[in-house]
Image 1 (cartoon, rainbow, N blue to C red):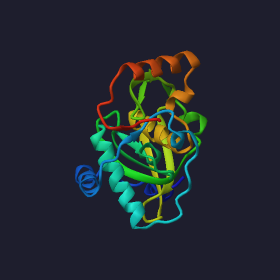
Image 2 (image 1 turned 135 degrees about the vertical axis):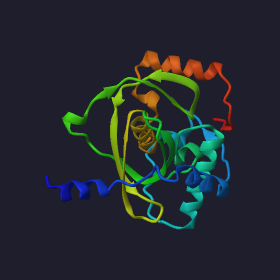
Image 3 (image 1 turned 90 degrees about the horizontal axis):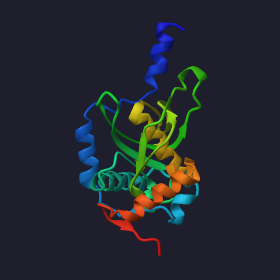
Image 4 (image 1 turned 60 degrees about the vertical axis):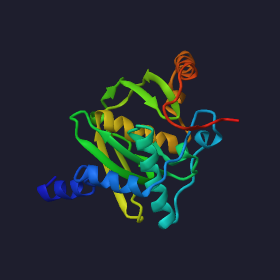
Length: 208
């Protein structure tokens, strides 16, 4: 591979670290905080609809998602976590080096990793839709997600460590899976017990 090829390959990834604080604040200040849906809510347990309209409504949804994410003190939030059946997630997440990543992905797809990049990490994982509960879960420590931005332009995001976990976790949400769906029955029972024994620090939607 030539240097030009390498440069072109790198150019497909967005820069989500420059002006991270200002960009997050701008989204959040335009948005409205919405309550978080929790495990058992039907919208969390089915694949979300593909976004086909890149309009002001989508931009407003992304603003609301950033506002809701900050209110719940989360590092990532999928649209169905505020009850919206669309394939969109936002993130404000540090990587293992402490670098802050802020952005959004519409219609995300996690890229299949080549064997040499597939190094597994078994760190703790939690979820705003399973408040107060944590459990170790094995995931690859590197991830590439491809999708679109709010204008419909193709984008790619890459992450390592904790940020890679975030990208995979949020894409799972939009495919109708929570992280607890990847646990054993015993681990899942433990997580749900943790959730039942706690009180969310943010507003949630009751499962009536």
